[in-house]
Image (cartoon, rainbow, N blue to C red; front, side, top):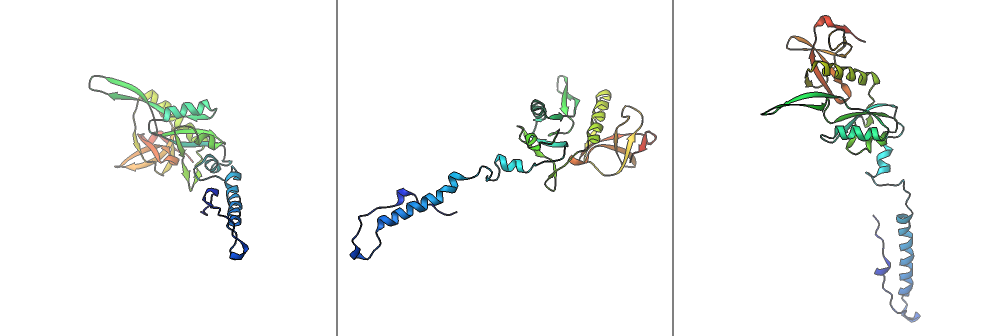
Length: 230
């Protein structure tokens, strides 16, 4: 950074006579004052778009004209419900998959509603910077610094899964999402839910989840209740 000389740093001394052969210092001071005005101008006339990293305009630049669709918002710990409410208040369509869980205390059992995916809320919209600037949201999930678009069919599938868990009160084990043969459950309480088949401990199991956030849930389903889904 170039240093800027302030007027208070200039010292004006009496002009010396021409016989001294030295340049008048008062003229040097005036020259320095002129340089100060030139150097200071960019600081006062800076364009509002020429911003430092981390400010709002720079932050919004990362979300220019994204495709309209669903995005996975990473939230602060235990802020999922707050973020879901704030997104709705901003007129942004949001979805917080939540299920009932029984917490067992020493003297009682208590049923609480908890997010299916910890620290994630899903939001839909094209003005992505409005989503990210919602209090409690860190960012959206990205691949190669590009927002990861979640297909509408995947969100609908999670909704069906949540409805089935609400009816059955089943608490499937959370597991990382894995690639595999995609299937659809054709009967039972999970009918219509899609997932991928994996082989674990000589048993066929189905993982229902989202590849975008690398999270899923493992459920046991009889082979006769599965159909291949392209």
